Image 1 (cartoon, rainbow, N blue to C red):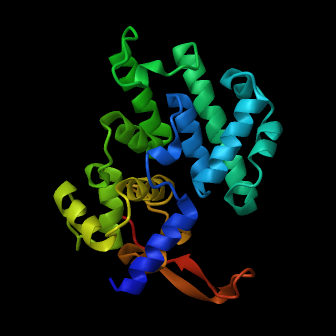
Image 2: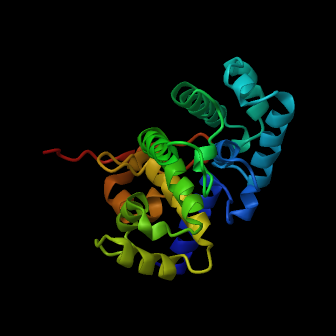
Length: 256
């Protein structure tokens, strides 16, 4: 992969998934607020996401009041994120409500104190396992980030989601596993903080680069990805109204 392709790929990832680069950038928030901030930060600058979170904290008495607020009102508070994309705002509003409802219904409260390091809450280990499994099933990128906070360090190569993306991009020449992934990231994303890599690649895996059915057609980096180049080709008959460039369409492949 050429230096231009590296720069382009990493730049597109930042544009689509935000500029989180350090734990300090997320502030010293309680566990639930931190997860909400991560949802807000996808595709937005962390400072803008932080401002929205602070507005929500000032507007509502607690997270339970936010949980039961009308959807249209929540979306109004999220306006301004994601470069004004209505679809992204709707998705974030839905994810926030989904998370708050799950926590309230399964744990009978909205405090996630059992996620705090050294928690003495009764049955904390079982609660952490139950909560983590829900994240894996519904918002897997958040589970990857939660793990980095629990362990106190960011190791993107340790997560299967990240390994899958890096292998498909072509950075590991078809190989997979933590060791080869770690080496590839050091080579192709030198200088980029591990947390930033973990965040962006996990979001890409969660949103587009699914294990069984990758959505290459709508992937933001298919043009710099080995699998994307094989799967997607420019259409000669359709052009984007926004850019005037050919629209990518997925090649049809035989399924076994």
